[in-house]
Length: 97
Image (cartoon, rainbow, N blue to C red; front, side):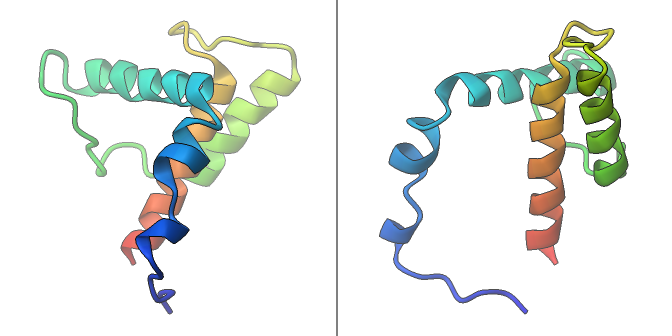
């Protein structure tokens, strides 16, 4: 069951997200860019939700790689940024239901 939305002030996107995590969000946005270049090179940035739908498994693979001391994936993107991206994607899919 979806939660009923409260006041917009209960969702402080700027003060409660962007100001809290500016560097982390910048890294996560790079995951979107790199993924778009991989799957849709040269196209406008967009999330193709038909590609790679295994968020929990991919999230844990990247977290495991990070735990083993691997900071960057083979494409030069931080594993933890990919963990965060996958967590957001998983939540987004849940909210889409």
